[in-house]
Image (cartoon, rainbow, N blue to C red; front, side, top):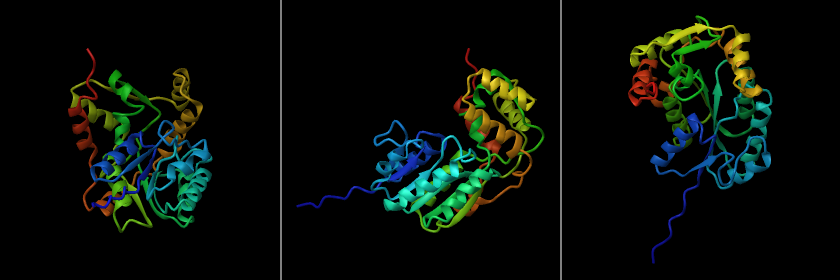
Length: 281
């Protein structure tokens, strides 16, 4: 008689349909780990605005990768992270990997909540995602050939999300990452204007970048019926976080993975080859 193999305990991926979450889930699956997607449409459902859903999503899990919606920078995020961590620990989930952001006061408060919780924590404190140009709010402007942002000459060390996902999976599945705060950036800092110029060169397209006053940027978002919470977040990121505080390059990717971080140029070449920036006929 053959003994039944035990089903491996799942790893909860909160925000498993998001930019980092889906990459983390795919990598876990490739490793033979069981990823449990934490989202409002999953079964069991997970909703940050409905704490009563958290326990079922955490039940039986061995670890959790945590992304907060819409962002740890928004008011109330630290309290939500504190409450979630308490539920996780009560349900035996001690290893928690938190996605955080550089230069965001509320994000840093969230980090402190996690550090003080008694969890086996790892924090991924990230710079701006390179994939914002190909998978998020900047894709449509790039495709239109006109990118207007309230971003001046301050450079940003854009980080490749694939690097972030690799670090997250290492922290979830390997020893040696508990109690580590990894600052994840790319290997160089460039301006938004330079980033757009690199995309233009790689695609052979003409893409214009211009700085837009913050008030006009907010008005344009409202005209597009963007939710106010997202507008507030965008204004915070462009007017406060992008003020030079995050220019310094960090070596968190190399610390965690033993290899250099992916350059923005390498990201652009890969994204351009995928056809994501091809204009439709």
